[in-house]
Length: 59
Image 1 (tube, rainbow, N blue to C red):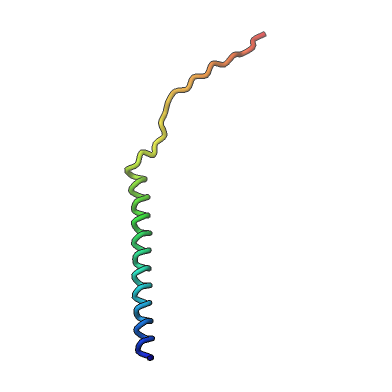
Image 2 (image 1 turned 120 degrees about the horizontal axis):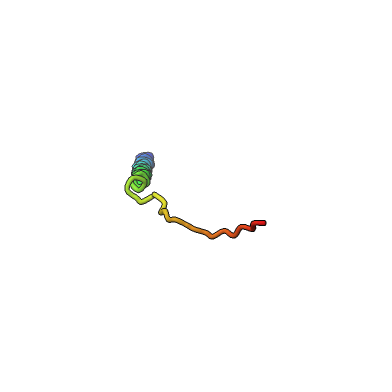
């Protein structure tokens, strides 16, 4: 009976270790994607000339 409980505990630890590694890898890939987009993505604003007529009252 004791051996079965130890086996289940080891299996749970293995699953948790796998999940932790998976989450860690996903976080690292997300950080890499953000950095990659910052370097490769077009983040510069588009520029254009805007002319607006202004009416001035002169006395």
